[in-house]
Length: 424
Image (cartoon, rainbow, N blue to C red; front, side):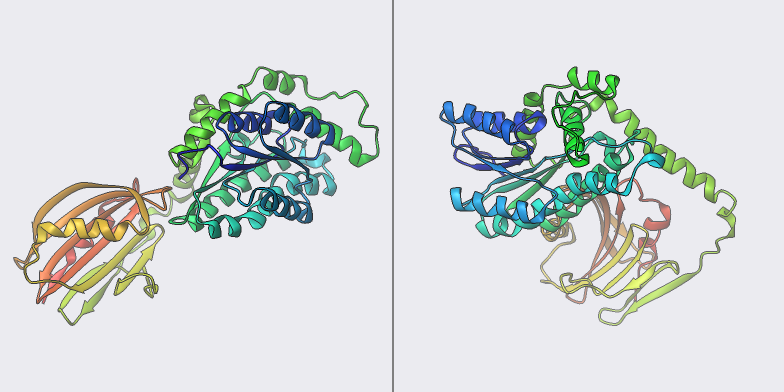
């Protein structure tokens, strides 16, 4: 992660106004060199002159982010000028939309082309060079609260929702590299996105861009009274310094987010309430020979082949529940109570924020001493998981049975699997 910003290079698309300009100003205050990309030449020239007059090293690049060719050019000239890019802000966006039944195919293509493909192209054109630089780097993708709490602009909400999941996937792929990822989900931030979107729409339709701009007066007022974009940019700096993935600018909207996911839960419960008693759970058994043991688990778990990157000898999965079995040689001097530290070391490859919740001595039904360890962690720094590990030492080998699931999804059906371990 980036802790020192002096001398770093930032590329900001849509950087000549609104959120992008706020990011540019705050990055400049941190001593960074700037590449500002924007489709509005007049605004871009004005902003770059102001930065240059204040002895800030800046380069302006006229860029339509819906064009892969232009974004590729942006990447090329950025590296030609500065030799590196440490922060990429895929920020350019438009706020066009309207009722679905009135939208044309072109309306959808335009909005998704800018808001979603602009982010995709930015990632494609910069990511490999950022990773290969081996310098601390950070990618910031601008989504919106509308990506999680849809409003009345379907193309905008759809594109911004896609940016969130795209960013989540990118964060998974970049875990344990020199590149960190964040996604901004702002609510109302002071900008002229509505005016710019209407002007660009006028140009697309052949109208004069000088024609008087009008629009939804309520939306316009909310933006005018919105958060200062420079304050929002300070939040972004904080997120970069502390490797924070989700940047929600307006925490007062968290109840609205909770309401959405509560609706998902309630609807799912209602959908299946008449099917609860129809599922007869059968059991199946996994048996091992050296050392000899068995474990019983529900037959709705799907047996999987352990991947080449795991040392597990057996994996079974259902939903986000996972059953994993490990067997490894170990020194006969090793004690059971030392094993949790070894488990944590193995988790360091895939996880952050690892916390040992508890360690308890257990005894299997046949009298074999065991050790149960409960650990919370975040897979690739994003998904919170709880894992429960039952460890046994036998015949110079360490047998570890692990079950894990989302932190709020551990239940008796999963933990009861551990109690079926039988040593032969």
